[in-house]
Image (cartoon, rainbow, N blue to C red):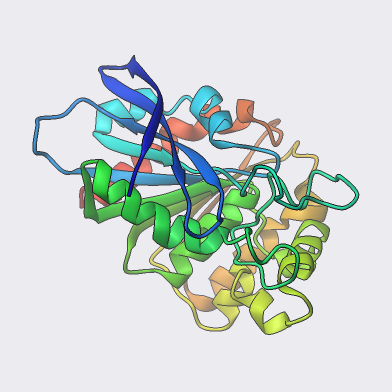
Length: 281
């Protein structure tokens, strides 16, 4: 699979790259970033996948996530995909809202027209892009983990629950844990998947756990000053579901923090250290 290099920058001894390729799944060009720490030639490295939130591209975490120092310390590759297809002819929200369409793919494969042709973000981030990354970067396929923020936290937790053998660890910053029950999710799942509520449950962390999906443990941070906490995030629903299912959950309420990258960057190194421990186990 062909890969176009858009930029390369040295950082903490490693290389931060941004790349573009023609996606089979989305029928568009897709851009993503990969940080590869310094390593001996021929060495395979553990990899952390990071899924971003509403309105974001690969660039938000790449430029503001402050992950490279920890990745260099622990020898972690850090991969950041985009959040939706983009380009001429890709449909967006009819009302031009931020929470649907462009920048808001919600990590599902749309079945509803006109979105079904391009909005195949589930298959993109769990199948197509991992194969592309494995072909071009020194990823150890047996040592991968996943994390994300907000809509991307939703994507990371559902990916872990549906592929528990692929990821050794999963964590999230301010995730949307029950999209079937909150405005962001109801709009997105209804718009992309229609009225099939069974299809919704496959992309709902709490519903997946209720339906029997399991993962070894989760780490979740949220800020108590997050403006979306009570209406959109609902961390108490994840806590209740994990307690009932016997899934170890470290749920941390961080005083004074909001939903922004000031919050994410403050705890990014902490999360990556947690991931590294499990990736090296």
